[in-house]
Amino acid sequence: MQKNQPPQTRLNKSRERVTSQLAPTGMTKNNLKRLWSFLVFTGIMIISCKESVKHIETAKCEKVIPDSATAYVKELSDQQLVRLEDSIVMKGDVEAYEKLRIYYLRRFEMERLLYYSIIMSHKYNNAVAYGDAGDILLDYRTQYEIDSLDSKTKMLVTYFLLGANERGNDIGKYSLFKVFKNGSFPNSENLLNSEIIQ
Image 1 (cartoon, rainbow, N blue to C red):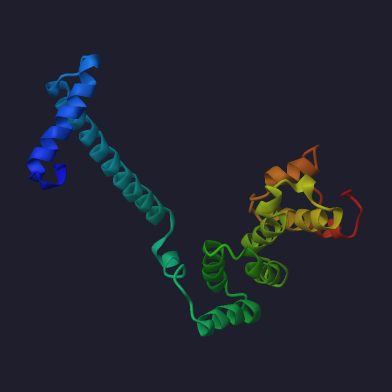
Image 2 (image 1 turned 90 degrees about the vertical axis):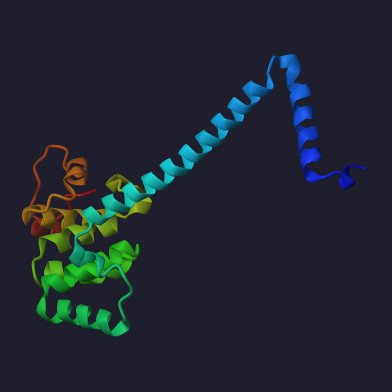
């Protein structure tokens, strides 16, 4: 019987049913309209705020990453990657290392960067590469806690972080203070030849 009624009549009956159910609570039709208006307005505000937050977060990211770096976040062809990698290994090209570094870090492929960090640190004495090698070996999976590493990995991490520190990159100073509690850091080259770290 209800199916044959026009839609407006069905809508009016459902409003009456809701109103009759709310009557014992003291809710009137006028209050119900205000409540619905409030809920719709609140929903619209929440949705628009979420969009504003997304826009602000995107703007922050764009400001943090320089324009030259954002180009390398995009896909690089195999040929471009090989060219950057060769330039790093053969010439110690700092700009190529920075491009490759940003590319791999933004793609969360830190392990692929490790080889080039070691080359740039040892062969070309690059402070950023020393810090990267230490940071990659320390790894987010250990929650960057140097004490949770086995002794050989801990020695390698300490070696690279000391090398970075000696060259003015203090990326791992916190970890170094955990290893050398007295605050006196040995020379990184001496570290490899000794049993300083347990």
